Length: 127
Image (tube, rainbow, N blue to C red; front, side, top):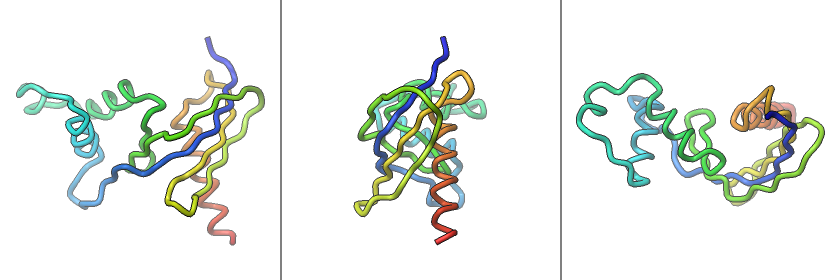
């Protein structure tokens, strides 16, 4: 069942694509292996596109998120409820705080976080 969610929390950057030759899928593979996941030789020979991202999203929903090829750990998460909005702000310690309220039948956690990031970047450019 879908319903409106209002979430407020804080994110900490834990990994990102820094090598221009690395793909986002490689980053997800690296992250999963670092979390103890093991892959058999068949998986490594012929991974389907998006395989590691899907595993990441399934296994770490609301624990970690990926936005703009950067993986963030959700270090605080409080669930409120009612009307829609999305905001994010950078903190002095390098973390990002967020406050979200949305109908989860129309958008997902990561999608609404992306809206908040877009708004945060727009506010930076308009300063």
